[in-house]
Image (cartoon, rainbow, N blue to C red):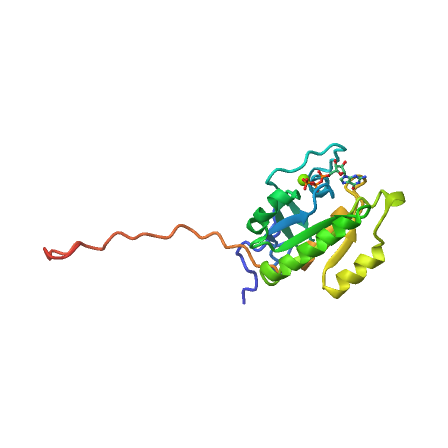
Amino acid sequence: MNIINKMNITKKGSPGVSGTLMMPTPKYQTYHAKLVILGDTAVGKSCLVLRYVREEFCEFQESTIGAAFLSHTAELGSESVKFEIWDTAGQERYRSLAPMYYRGAAAAVIVYDVTNRESFSGAKSWVKELERRAGTGIVIALAGNKSDMESKRNIEFEEVAAYAQENNLLHFETSAKTGANIKEFIQEIATKIPKTPPLETHSAFPIAPPRHRRRDPFSCW
Ligand SMILES: Nc1nc2c(ncn2[C@@H]2O[C@H](COP(=O)(O)OP(=O)(O)OP(=O)(O)O)[C@@H](O)[C@H]2O)c(=O)[nH]1
Ligand SMILES: [Mg+2]
């Protein structure tokens, strides 16, 4: 009995069957997921994304206009998630654009600034909006950013953790400045999002020529 599946069932770049062991290696999947970043202005959304994608931090990051798009892949062992990240603008005048970015998102990161209590109220209003208007199954995560500014902290971790637990949200404190917790946070989101396999690449649909033209003068052929 042939138990070797000769189809391409391998992790990228690895041989199909190793040694003489006749067991197929598990298929390596790459999933695509839309990730939207929401939150008040100046909480550090863009810095957080830039730290995650480019490992950079800019003290004088310009306020986002409209939205910015970046992508990055999170590796999860036997699979990976390619995040298509929409970093939205937090200024009030752009608020009406947000549904365009969170529609169809697999996950939303709502950022607040641990030194700014008002930004936590803003985050709660984003949670309500997503619960009402975003698709079911969206993973919502709260990021308490600027955790490096301990002496200016205005919101305790425990307070937000309790709120997150009540509302079934992920919650991390992060620092775009030091990079603390950012990879771990996005990695956790990657494990939680529902995985829909990417469409298989189909071979071109064969278009067969008509076998023979009919002689019937009223026929299209
Ligand atoms: N200390 C500290 N400062 C931060 C951190 N993240 C961002 N900042 C500062 O906060 C400022 C605002 O950050 P942005 O990333 O532009 O904020 P934003 O949320 O994208 O703002 P909008 O684009 O207006 O919505 C930056 O210029 C940084 O100096 C952090 O983790 N720690
Ligand atoms: Mg920004």
